[in-house]
Length: 503
Image (cartoon, rainbow, N blue to C red; front, side):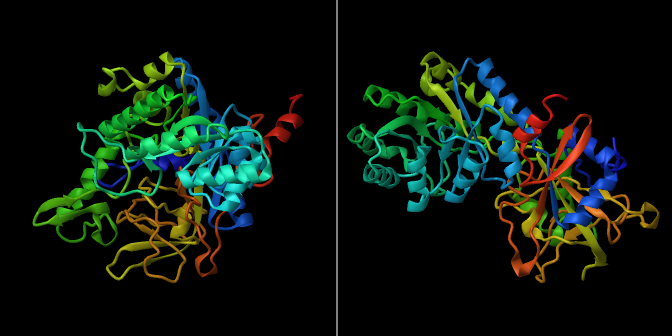
């Protein structure tokens, strides 16, 4: 294990706020054996820099495939590509028995060039005519957000004189049950389940043009009760569709499977408790930027509010979370599980994991520009990157980054902890809203590596605001007991397999 990784794992957790990250074996071995290469890559390609480990997706896919086998289920995995733009990941995925899910016209162009045949592609998301017409021409599966999309797709098909039916899912929303109270928060995706009569009428009226694959939905709530209701509603409508002669092939339950960021559950719970306790302390003990509390606040000595971060150590994650969800007893079906119902009915199960298949596929590195004190005396580390290079619309990464020192002998101890901020000429360019406690204060030229940033973090909302650089991607693979690197665009696993067939 590298000194940098050991630095995080062996911190004195009794005196410092610490949250060691999960690090996959491939990444850990690369860090251990190639610290000089990491500096060389940043020197060559700049900061920020994203390192991609595409071989990890093979393991993640295999874990989900094992759940299908265990539960005697047929169907297909659609890898949701939108959380990351890396083409090396898409190419690696194409060499597996997995389909892919895209969300825009350009993404459809990209995955076609990455080796996915049209029958392996599903188009989701809101669709303009450019996107929809290409989907129709290519004969990919269309996951329809609304009936207008389906009507337009049929009209495009007819205008082109295409005879083959369009493979389609219909996306559902608005799940409800007298047993469970849902929040009143509105949403933009899908057709409300109470519009089922209109959906059935439309599908039957266009049965000559549409090959109805089944209903689809996406439900990422951590609430088991709400997950159960979504499954029940979708299964009930699937059975009704069969009764109405629509012959659905199966059910698409989307993704939303949790992943694990923090190494240990007890450390994670202790971390959350320490953040809350810091809000009640007096003077000099803030653990979050401007004492923001990560969603919590002190009101008269009581902690109020709610977390504005995801749980970093869920009890069940990835394929295990998938297995658990499809085996939950469904009260509306006399306690039978979705896995039992689908298997017994010979219906297929489709899923769309994105985050879970991208788990542990990438890290983001920023080079230290300088350190300084803030107005209130906090130690600040300025990185040659900005918040758009390490940011998500709906989560914060709270785990400790790994520090690579060019010369540790020049570094001072850092008992007070640090915040990382970026290179934008704006006051809100904070990269970490939680204080972290490296053993040594980073010096200019040192590197800070953030772990597990491939899903939704490294490039999901990245921009070149104020003409700052966006992060380049370098692909790292392990081959013949050594590590090789490629630019993201140049890594082609099919060619690598061909070139090494005699090895």
